[in-house]
Image (tube, rainbow, N blue to C red; front, side, top):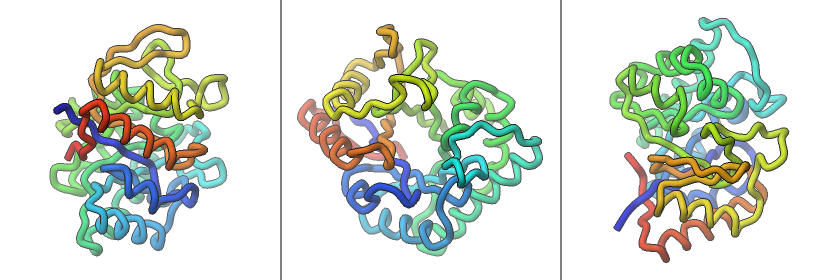
Length: 247
């Protein structure tokens, strides 16, 4: 039986975290940049622990007004400081709860910029070195994120998105563009099955992108996210694909 990790971005103050945690195997928790605070971080970690769901940190640009989805230009020292502070906050919260942070996944505009620009990825990942032993990086496959994280010596878990449109180059369609978000459950299920079984993603132009991704994300704030996640997990099980954490 093949296996894949099903992850969701949670602790963001939107959607139904409890219901998503009953479905997914990994949870990327907002840690104060685009959303989240000490209370939401602790609640999310404890809820994940109760269900045996692996926890990761989900840092972003310090941009709560735009939910971290607006591109920013920060000096490297400022970017280093904000990423490190966010991840450290969740690490300390998780250690106190007895359920450690296992990976880091960048959020929103920062994730997209790091997928395109090796220098940005390098600053972000160097910022979290040493915070947790054996920290992994959850990185969009076929991107600068994955390449840089591997070069820095991190364990890399390659990720794909069940509910986001792809460009032919393997990067995501900008959120303001047509086709950026897949909002039909049938389309999300089809994407998920093809990725898990054939290692392929169909881009918005119809081209086929090979992928080695073994973690599949459904955004917690996507409309109908819980129903999508439940349908995806059921379809994967029906196809003989086990859902389990990559760590």
